[in-house]
Image (cartoon, rainbow, N blue to C red; front, side, top):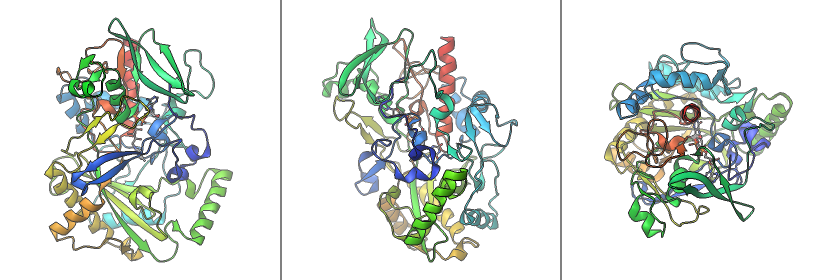
Length: 494
Ligand SMILES: Cc1cc2nc3c(=O)[nH]c(=O)nc-3n(C[C@H](O)[C@H](O)[C@H](O)COP(=O)(O)OP(=O)(O)OC[C@H]3O[C@@H](n4cnc5c(N)ncnc54)[C@H](O)[C@@H]3O)c2cc1C
């Protein structure tokens, strides 16, 4: 196994509350090309680097999506991927502290825990929503997804439980060698079959051979990048980059889908919510000490503690908007440091119609790919986002949350359609769920077949979020892990 980053064993990874403090060592920190739908702004696209990938820097929320999302995959030409067929794999992967039932597993490697230290502000969010007759949902991955509640998190005993901690043994294993700080440059082929990869380690070019197969799991941006660097992708674009075309496959790097998201932010008096102030710093230091001694307390927080799935007036049977309530002020993904205390709430479009692309900006794997999510290029996404923001504000304006008297940092008349649209264009961005750039399907154009083998090339598989034919209605870590489980099973059978 080759990984461009490090081992991710430090406190920065393991202590959940260190999430906002990632560096270039653990985060690729990509940016998008300027987005016309966002007033020409460049979006931010954090991606995890190092063992565990984005599960080492994410918010740890354990969500699978809606059962009908997978039935939709099946109906789009992915036999074997309907809800009834993927559910056993979710259960296999899961170790839920609540125990097993029809929806959950308790013997898998991926620990899923309840938040033991949810902030009272998060509970106030849930209570406010329930006063609006929105159902309180104790399990978004159970009988129904709709409703509000506290999220379960991928943690074990108060520590972040990355995909690597779940699946990679801490010691040596006879049939696995892990090489970190190894940037894969391209796939190697012998007689048309994937037979290894070229990579660089400490500046030195190397090659490694695969007897059976090569599996790409570089994520929704870098898996298509590696395919294109290996001559598999849109032929004209590869020719432009001076890359010999091995397989003209326009779907590589196409069909990029991501959750466009608006964050409302509120300032409060005092230090009840988290924030930047002398007292905030003291509280954080106290929480760190508590975590170091007991693995409990404020540093176990995913910050996005509460949230839910709503059906706006534009929704069909499935919720069309997800909320994430945060116990701190978030500006520009936390990159802009704001003084003072407060809370924030995200609203995102769960099934965007906009489709974007990932392309190469250079034939060098070390260059960031050109990422164009084409956010809000389909006007239907703006309509859903406006409905979602309005629904979110109804909750934020309801006691007991409203009793905290947060001062809205971006107040507008929400009834004014034009004002809301322009606020969204000025402030919306991703909530970090890009997928679809190596889409699975049975049609000629699909990148991988329903057994995750790259169509038209032998010995090459993909096992990550890029294969999702449609973005699921929820956070994408658990579904990516489910895809990994299935890839392993397919490989064993191949
Ligand atoms: C800030 C943030 C918050 C999120 N919050 C949540 C959440 O709370 N819940 C949730 O369900 N989802 C969340 N997600 C999304 C979720 O983490 C991802 O969907 C999931 O991890 C994707 O898995 P993946 O295997 O497709 O790719 P990744 O996890 O991104 O893994 C790709 C790996 O490939 C490596 N790599 C890339 N290129 C190369 C190369 N050329 N050579 C060698 N190695 C390479 C990378 O370093 C990385 O380790 C979040 C994501 C982010 C960024």
